[in-house]
Amino acid sequence: MISYIKKGVGFGLTSGVITTLGMLIGLSAISESKAVVVGGIISIAIADAASDALGIHIAEESHEDTESKHIWTATISTFVSKFVIAFSFLVPLFILDINVAVPVCIGWGFFLLMIFSYKIAKDRGENPVATIFEHLTIASIVLIIIHVTGEFIKRFH
Image (cartoon, rainbow, N blue to C red; front, side):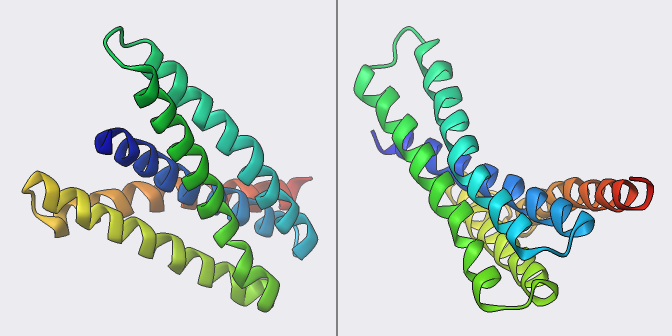
């Protein structure tokens, strides 16, 4: 049972950080409207959490030997973790100017990825520094591409 919770939380946390930061960085590159960015994050928190949870649910159902309670454990833990993580990015947006909130959100997201990456590495008996570096590098590449895309859209739209 614990492994299914860990699977759901790990997927939800990682997807929540990358997807929410992607939305935040992309929208903030296109528009400085806090309402647009907040609306995007709320949409991600609801729709993408449900989508990811259903994806985990179907993936787990495809394994013939997985018990129903384990399928639902992974499903619910994915939804809750993704939803909570996405909503956590709203806090800086509500209390800070958008130009300050975006870097704070990036720091928060990378902090979450670092903590979870460290735990994964320790559980697997691997070098935490290498695992953290790998995960943060992948996240950085994705977010840089999204930022460049947002700037391109802003410039040529």
